[in-house]
Image (cartoon, rainbow, N blue to C red; front, side, top):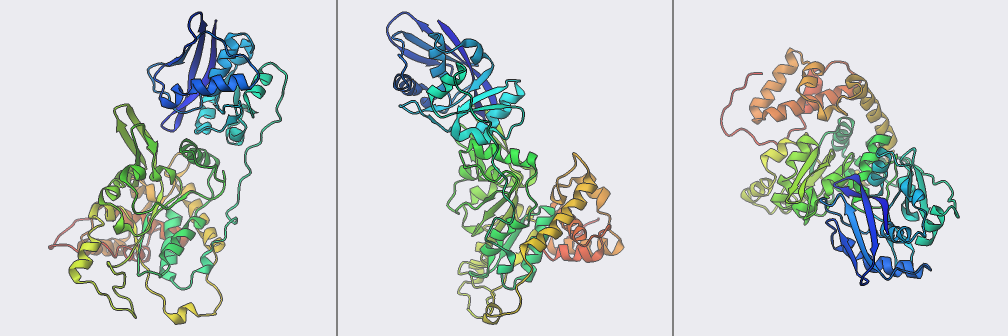
Length: 512
């Protein structure tokens, strides 16, 4: 007897349908799986046999052959357990074939027949809807995530027995509601908690308003990490489309479901991370930290302590917003449009320029330490912010607290609204991703602004990329002020955020 069950799998962060064919034939009781299965799929035979028997069904004493089609695409994971088990029961006519014909089935089986959650349910659900299939049978633990996809009937089964009862028409589940969104106020962090550091707060406000990358440099204890962890509070909430994009990546990575319309992702990997874990990859590529931070914030604390190779792989995602990972099994593209927030000390000991503690580092040591951040990487960071040490008088100041995150967030939202109106549907999401055409159309400098920027480029030895990024930051500063045109004042503030750029080695001339 032959039975067919529709299932689904994930390639990269996108789902595709897989047809599970189960054939029962006379012969020795052998269970074989073909169709490029990985080890987890091959091991499913033992889980399926035990789950079928422990659910009160007899497992056929026949030769069982399972084919996963398309057979030329690698299949991995444990999501094929449930479709294989239902295929075996359908081949023995214990499950009606017409009910299976309109459903897609995924799920991992425990030995007692219970269903356990699997990875990548959201991209699977999107693939099911795209294929025109109306029903998705899956573990109850994945149901809320799948319910994010409109127009799909989600059947949350707790066990193999419940899945069989649904297909037989003996059980009807309650409708599944998607997870409730959280608000940006569901947090205990606030910029009002940060004493002083007005220049750094202003820079982070500009970075949030335009989606710009920022690097903070200051001694230990100055508040760099505290500021960075509050930066995500300034960003506008995820739109539903952005939330689906982000959740697809987190679903494939097996992370818990974040608030769908709440705060943006905030990823803070340790400096010992490898370049593969940061950028993505592996024998069968998985998204890395840059993709997990998509539509959110990637915070790299102690930036010079990261491996040089790991930092250099950031160039492509910072410039293009995606990562291409090529392996022998194929090439995959992962989205990686994030705001980079980095922090570093001014020297190896951390106290260069400290008002009360002497620095023990030689000029050569300071130079070597800062040189760990390559020029091409620094070129892609829009704002360089000095975060000085706070004096005791500032810490003990009992004056009213600084501006709260809600007030800063309102100004950021207003600036983002101006950008959305300016670029229109289908245009850049924010000022940071403007292309040459948008720069030419929306950033027009007067004579004073052009002269100021030309002088800065010559004195600091800035590249053409840095020139463009200054223009983008100046446009964001103008948006925060509600100004239509970019003036000399806006350019001057934008140039002030390039303090870490290397001075020119020799005299240069530039024509702008």
